[in-house]
Image (spheres, helix red, strand yellow):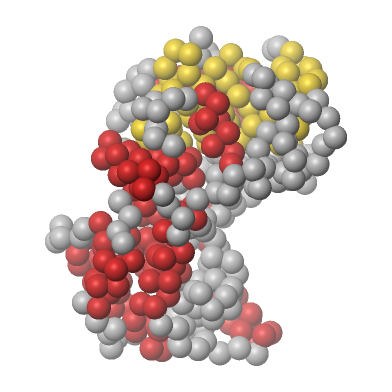
Length: 386
């Protein structure tokens, strides 16, 4: 379905349909690293396939768990990624140099299980022996990072362990808690334990790291592994403000696919405090760097500067796909605010894509047809640079 939508500056075309679906292509298992507010791999894949060729640079200024970056690497594109949270690089970069399960198992054998408890109270999350293993693994990884001896296998283990710290199944280190993209406070976990009548049981952290490693690597083809390693050799991962990315050359990016922080909906600092502790990171300092605008006007001020920087680094003829969603119980449609910002920065607005689950009519944008059995993937504003 194609409609016109007035913005006060222009009449913008709106395309509604199923442009990608979860069943259309089974996403790579390598994406299964949990992070709050991440989109499905089919979203960046749609735009990567449609708007880029092998060797083009694909960028995400709010990279999160690295969905755009990983999908670009799998497809033989060059990668640039940025996020204010250093956890993004911890979770993304190792997947461009995946070790074999055998290499991971061999390395884990060299890491002691440990005797020490954490300096903070984690008893509501972990069995004492599990906690000792986590502390020993944390110490090993931080020491290797500090003395410069950490290699691709160490970074992979750090990524997997970070992802396994807490969750709601026996595949995680913790007792039952919230899904792994969130970490509740110790007091909240104590309430969960009381309500469920549960006590943390022992979890073999080394076994779980190896199990998750095998899961992440399952199904990767030799071509995809080669693409990842080639992309990884050239990839650049930045930790900083998306409004100022001097490490990215002007006019170098063919496609940006991103989803920005949504006002104050997602509490990145609170969700990631335990992951930050494990990685030796200051969650408070990180939280202060992450944009958590509480009003639309504040959000517009920040995103306006982001768009000016995106215009600088985008190649002529390049594109930006900006996933905005609907926030605050659908009372705010951010595309109505994003479109003028992109236009003011110098972009042309090609339209708004709304991907929905079930439709009876075929929808088209640039000649691409509808599919069936879709997933609900919010709203994406597409811009081009003249």
